[in-house]
Each structure stands twice: as C-alpha cells, then as structure tokens.
Length: 67
Image 1 (cartoon, rainbow, N blue to C red):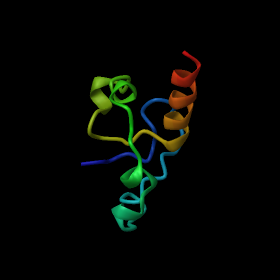
Image 2: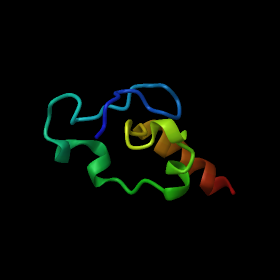
Image 3: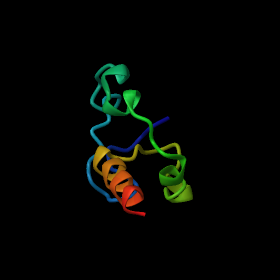
Image 4: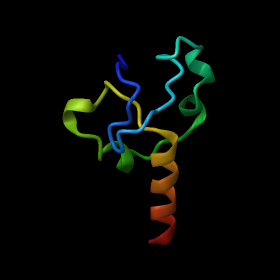
C-alpha cells in the first residue's frame, strides 16, 4: 500500500493520485512504463510504500539515452 506523497529517490512530491483521493487510473504512473533498473534504486525501506515521481522517471530515461 502506498503511503507517502514523497518520491523515495529525490524527496520531491510524486503526485500520487491515490494519495490525493483521486482515481488511481488517472495517475500519470498508471500509463507509464517505469524501468526495473530505476525501481531497483529505491531504498529497501521505501519499496512498496512510495511512488517514484515523473521527474525521476524522465531523468532516468535521459541518463540511459546518453549511454
């Protein structure tokens, strides 16, 4: 169960629709493919408790494209 509105990677807001009491299917992440390698960067204690933010997903994709 997601419990935090804070991204576990950058400590910014993650805009979680479920936490905002909106329809979770309206959340940006519901329609996004979040790379497994990025999810692996989440500290163990935050896994399953907080969503990664859209900015971190974008930054990761840019980082990967440069490699």
